Image 1 (cartoon, helix red, strand yellow):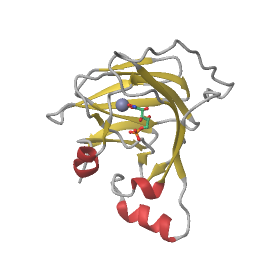
Image 2: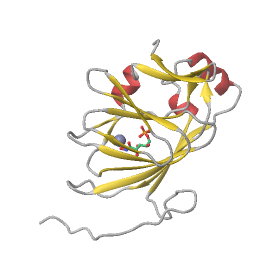
Image 3: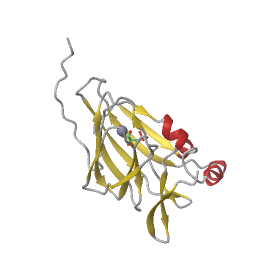
Length: 189
Ligand code: PAN
Ligand code: ZN
């Protein structure tokens, strides 16, 4: 018989961090070195001894059972490599069909969605906006503002993360800031 999971509630503090979480991840520039377009600039920054934190994830993970949810607060710092805005790695869910909801809590952001045929969609993910990610879409958050972008994600606990395809192929579009404007352009790689 399936183990019964008790209802529970976790408070978020004034910075939207969960007061209790199982795991904190800190992703630095060196973890994303293959993903930014201007790899030459990434290597230049790293060889100067800097390795800035790009984002942090506070996970409230539950055991991977069907019908159970996990959640996470992500804090994505503002910045660019060349003209490409800081982003999260991005992934497909391993198990299909598994969708997700992202809730914008602070800052200004975008959500890039890419289907299995590499077709791109973009959603706004500013403070107060709720983005619905359908199953079978890779998803990546992009901070297009000058402040921290914070969002809460809620996903099936058995979804799993498949980073491999995005690490190998990237997204077919990237998000850049040029002449004060935010634009989606073809990934030159
Ligand atoms: C989110 C992401 C989180 C970090 O909780 O895992 O924002 O992004 P990456 O996992 O792409 O590094 C989520 O989409 N969970 O499924
Ligand atoms: Zn996800």
